[in-house]
Length: 277
Image (cartoon, rainbow, N blue to C red; front, side, top):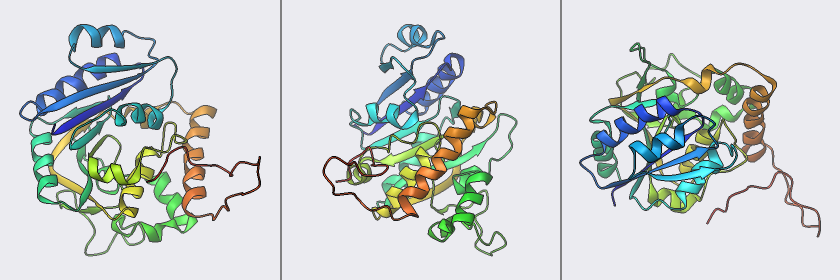
């Protein structure tokens, strides 16, 4: 099978319907399978899926397990040569899958690919080419981790090789709204780190793809429409805890050298919840 499409949804019935129709239409000319992981939606999402999308493979969680753990349920089952992780608030362009797969087939060094993202009003989203927003950019600069993300041009936006909106280029990070991943690369890095509940899962996964020796690309010759719902949530203690907690988790993995405790009965501090083969 060429492609496995995976969507994680939580109380997004109407947007999910649009996202699935668009993704399935875009993949109609390639062999594919579709997974929807529902994170205990209280709306009519499951009824809608069973009625309108009988061929979709549904994984229904009894609680909101977050993004990384939800994706892992489907990643364990997906058999496609490529795996497309697409948000429920995203409309995939009609030719987007065809063009993106064509690029990946031609670039065997590519572990992952992201595309040009625009808002419903047609505004270009800069997160397309750098993979993360301003708070994460500030975090990388303050922690010194920016030196590991040179392809995002964090330190010198005036550089002549700064990535423009329509310039195909390597990228450090692929935005989670649309992540086309090579299954071979995922076989090397394992599943997502389930400590990333709502934010940071895409940044961590993209970085691990690069650490495994593959390249990530920004491919602007096609597009998706993204409603960017995740970044429009109301600020709350839960939001702040998950958002900035993701940054702390990332720093603990790649900045701070946390020793592995060998004393029997004492667990390792912040152990990873995935296995890297």
